[in-house]
Length: 350
Image (cartoon, rainbow, N blue to C red; front, top):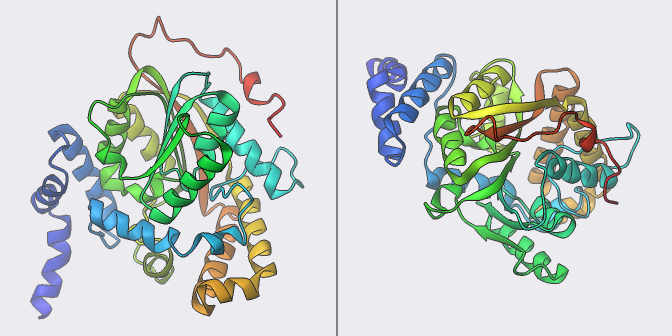
């Protein structure tokens, strides 16, 4: 018994064992991506618990968090159901306007133009896809691993009269048709669910689905150090974000560059997320009785604790939030990019 328990950590971090598991789970990924994934895995495995990753495990983890109920999330999110960091042009502004400004900021960074195609990976309740189709005239396609989110988004698309211009489906992004190509791609609040060993395969897959010269925006949380096996992390793994995983900004940027992207812009939004979480906490507390009735006392207290701790963590710089805008490298002479950042700060859609 004792011998077996001592042997397990070595097996978890042994390169041959790790490599075999990664290749078995993701046979579609090339040897270079697998090798980089093994190295990333080993860098982060020493102090923590390595969680198994597969499409089935990822779907189960997403459903655990996002399928609590659409009605529960509607209690504390804005009317557009945006469950990611807002963008406060006015530090004292309201959540509703800040979320509209965030959606528009993403669209501006991607330089969306009418007629282009946009892939929205991990689209949630479809807020970005719908916004981009409504205000920028693109043909947007969102994918989510939450059936509740997909059903909600599809119904909203119907109500908004956007059928044919915007679609959301319950699907793993890895299962998109191999020949599917898009002009622009966004992954907002997705990288936290990917798993550090899977970064090379994830960014490689994004690159393959992006047309030459296309823009990709990665919006996600980072941590200064790898996640260690602490009681706080185990709480998040068990009750809030199964399979959650955070890397540092430098490692994320390195993996993006290795995948063949040129980094165009990096913006830190840590304090914006701290304010967003505080707004969510306030709104959830105001609707406490309804939250308990919808999801139960345990879920209400768990989400209140997680959102409160997140607000503190962002405020104290334990974790950060970055938007990274990249371009798929192809012909540097033909690439066109704005000379300044002025296009990002014009008047947003109301």
